[in-house]
Length: 346
Image 1: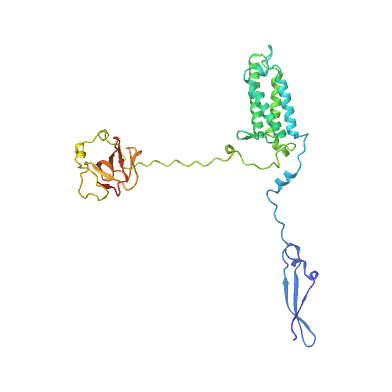
Image 2: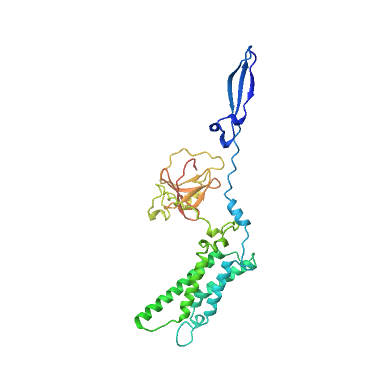
């Protein structure tokens, strides 16, 4: 038998069910051998799977926003349709606010105390900011932590609620007494403010106006509009078991068996820089000098630090309670030293 040779079969001879992933065909390599009498024998078939067609890269999540940002937003002049309609609604409401809202003597909205502030004043400021944003983009970007559109939504919503309250009171009074206390101006203003609510609060959900809010560039939120920080419980105040209230006798000079003249005789003179501790046993109520190796707090009976002692000056201990020293400051204050480790007695 001669050496085997190989031959590639064309793709069309491969059954349809053996097509590769992505629709690519499978290439087959035939290993054949030829005998001495010329007979050709197929020894093996090797199927070669072509590389799968690379799947298209998934679209980025920001692709729709980028596409919307590139889509032109058409309007009327420098204003969008929503802004133009909202401006017209405000203009009509502002014009009729000078008409009387009560029958009888002339009394417009502007002559009824402070009623004009929420009913027409705040919506006027909101519309002014909307126009200023278009004609001066670097003007007032927000009111407090609210964007201009958010402020406009709040302004028209508050105004509509005030007009609804006025209408409710007028209808209730008229039903009870039969006297009409409001004119048609109130109802017209109520309808116009409700239209303003639709053009501000509900506009992102209306197909005609929602393009005004889509595709806007992202900005960092105002600090007051960001998510709040988590609140953690305040750590409990741990009172030292020895920090118990002491009798008032300790607040006064303690009669510990020593006289002021003892200081003059040098009976309690601290050791100079030797630092050698006294090994004689000292009575618990006998005063002595102490030198702390580091700065330590002396606290009152409630655990509040009142002064500190340290290695730079000797402190007068008027009572030794074992784990607690009663320390007297040079100005007369008395406190408790709870950390008495490595304290040098003098």
